[in-house]
Length: 157
Image (cartoon, rainbow, N blue to C red; front, side):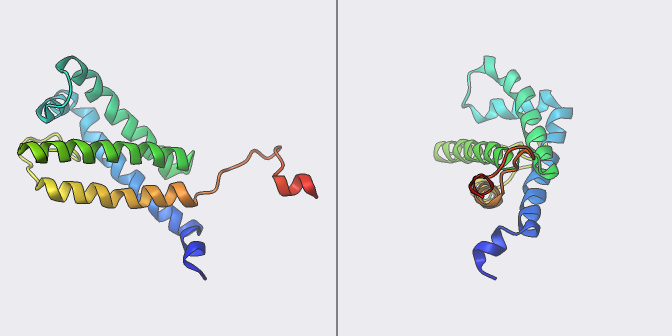
């Protein structure tokens, strides 16, 4: 079995979907339950105008939750993985900007608790590593076709 075949296998894709989707569902839950605390964490990033923070603090966790659940369930896996990869890229950029500024902050990634501090370089490394299953899913997931739509090969037969 070649590496490409192994990566395209159902078990490999399922593992990537469960890891990435599960982490985002887990990360979203506390933010959904405590939007006020999450809004404060977003404010601490000092990257957005104050008037947009509450909207982001309410919308972002639900986007993470829905995309994570869709990924776990295998519904629109490429699209869900692309959304989560986009979020990861934004998170990496936000952490990188604050690292360059020398700011110490709580990322709010998995908890809205203010007593959790993490090394920002490790946060960036973690997010970069989480891009791997997202890219894996985007590259190797098969697009589902409706039963009534013939494939190009079926049309030629």
